[in-house]
Length: 62
Image (cartoon, rainbow, N blue to C red; front, side):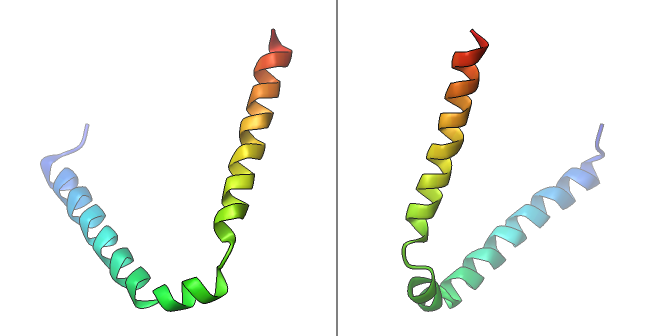
């Protein structure tokens, strides 16, 4: 399906992307703490909302 060169490139790309994202996040960590305080609650609420919709879909399907 994929050649060995393509797989090697994909692995190298993923590793490099993760390393760059870690460095970028660590560089801006003070700004994230200042401006995005409380965003975890928004994420939790969004995940709960999606879970409720999924539960309703399963419940109403039966």
